[in-house]
Image 1 (cartoon, one colour):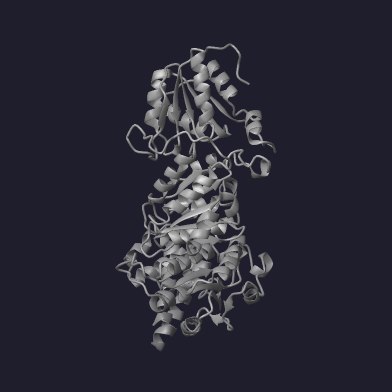
Image 2 (cartoon, chains in turn purple, green; image 1 turned 180 degrees about the vertical axis):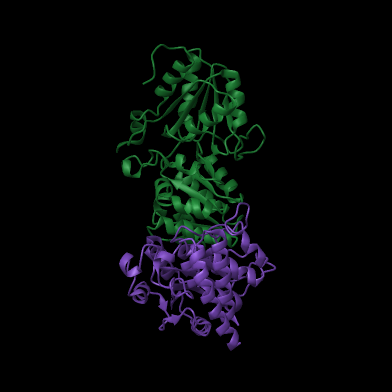
Length: 277
Length: 317
């Protein structure tokens, strides 16, 4: 069901990006299953009480995937799904990049990369200081990992070791200007986290398989050694053959021609999932 | 001033249980070490990573804590601008910036450590309150007010001992000991207004006495809060005197001079001049001598004020 819902969100996001002529397809499509699984299974949240103090926190550090976050939040019940069609409009609650002041369910305004690790660490430390037991997740992308501040946060997290703090890497290895290996190689990524004294999941999970993401969650839940990092192999632009792993679809507008070719592919994917339900 | 601020943090620890303090490996210098030793569970030393510190504090603030982040003013303004703007101010988070070693007060360390453009930078951030206390008493009052504010506050602090000007009991006209956006009238006069913030306030008081002896009567306004600015007090004063001299330990671009000029240009245009650091880098040296060399002195205030009041033919330099 979550697998199906993720694909459905992908289609809605493509529709909206086409309708608006603006927004980031590649990174949004990459994060669909991760966001769906977080909000529909992993995280303890109350959409009817978004400020509930004990809610689990997610910071979408790769804020350009905002449209997918909004789609997931809408389906989770934070606001009407129809409101997705106001994305990036004047007076909309759905800003170009996530804004915590504007959108129910958004825990932190992001967009400029490199903030998520530090901010989420602050939330996890606040849980400890306030004697609360919520979990704090940061979802990061390749560009985030390029930012120096991310590694300041990684260092500090390993010093303070707050409980229930997890960094999730949407590792599609494609950035705005090209493949990460050409722009800024991050491998060996797991070794980097390990060298900073993090507890790193021994497996790289398939970030497009809900069952694999659930497996990763079981691994996280079994840990006592914090912080933890989990790397998910993903594909930028996932679900559309000519957009997958193609940096040109990082933030290019979805024009009529691309839309006409892409949407049927996503629908075919949805149909396959439907048949499995 | 730093000792008083460190003590003020400690004094507020029990009254404000949400208070946490973060420092970036300068706690011994900024005196947050006092808090660290008394409340180790509510103190984080994040190492030399100021940007990370500000964002950690922001994350804590979203969860109901009241973080005070402490480092040198220069590092906040220059290394944390993105964090201050995009995370703290954009989200109106209650983070207090204890901006130490400001102005020329890190005098011997030289231009690399002197913070003379910080006010211009933080004043440009929506939702930020910007306070420049004139003495240790006001610094403590500003801290307490900032910790009770639902939004970010930048408190600019001097490294060095400074004269105590305000007894703890001396209230504003409103009767409050301190309030954001409320200036203090320190002298009543009719020939010109001097608006001053921070450490040079003591100099402005002395200059006002010298000017009085020369027959120039000064309306002296201490503007602790650059943002929000007490526009009413400034306009009322200039309506009376017709002239404005600003005095500050900051570049002439974007600090108090800029703030007052923006307000008067809109509400009550008047001839103005400033005592401020020119558009230049300073150097190493003893604090008082450095201030004097770069134009922050009783003599320079008196000279420029007299010239602005038309009582002296000598043009200020």
